[in-house]
Amino acid sequence: MHKDDYRNKIANREALIGVGLVIFNFIWWYAFAYGLGNKDPSEYTYVFGLPAWFFYSCVLGFVVMAVLVTIIVTKYFVNVPFDDEGEGK
Image (cartoon, rainbow, N blue to C red; front, side, top):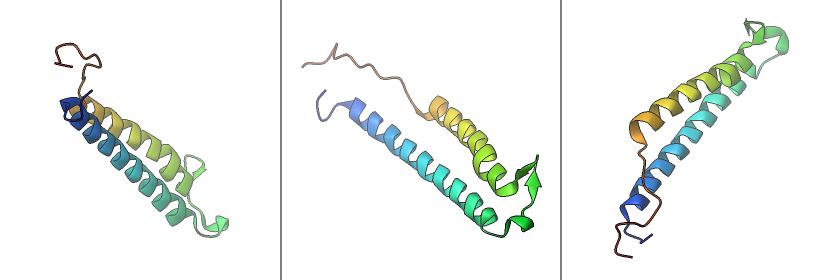
């Protein structure tokens, strides 16, 4: 694969999207885990029997990320060939 191959541009764009998703996931997790969980356990609120900080950071966070990744992969990621057929090597 040559340096100016169009597949490099696609791969770089998709890698940056992946890094953005990871950063978003970490911010989501950190904000809920330490935002709601940084108090005395006797003051916790509960959602479906789980502490709210855990539910929002881990359970809901997983669902949100699964939906986001599915949407982004289906709408913005493209199939590219890995073989060099058709290129002037």
